[in-house]
Length: 228
Image (tube, rainbow, N blue to C red; front, top):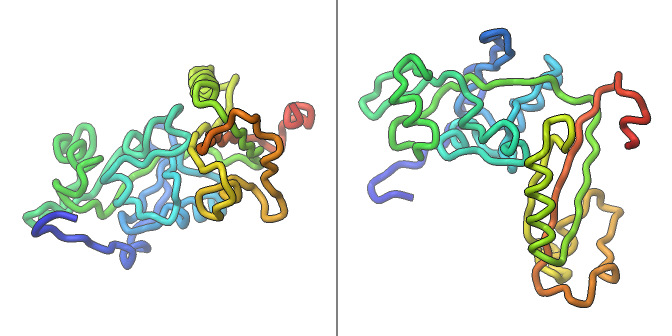
């Protein structure tokens, strides 16, 4: 990946840190840089009913790995990428020093390590912001044949107030064919659902566009709210 550089597999350190804290009245979790996001999410939800505010789109990646890039998913329009939802890091520098850093403590290293592609050190611990996990999620995918309509709706949804839009908004592109990886089968929610190309307009080209949306609910919400 870099001439004379190193690629380090941190997964063996995944259990080194896992501690719930409260910082300025808000919940956070201290996790290892080698922990997988899917494990962090599962443990936070099952133990505390909490979840990270911002995830990465693919959860089988390490915390330190995505924080060294950005960590972008459907929550980024509201909370920013994962690099914007960290309050403290422990970093091993190129000199072998173990350094704790934050916005106020060693800030140059903190902001250098976040999104720094590993050039400023190896992230061995991160303090990640949490929020209450939803009890239910409504998951919707909307397919578009026209790019202009797709971007218009996406921009509208991400510009609305928090209580007037979805909790997750993400867009992607797929092929207008039956390829199992990149075509119609890749947009399904359940194995028993099938994409019906008969609904596509005659003007549809070789590429289609999809908005993936999710809305969070609590068990205390009224059924009418959930249905709406």
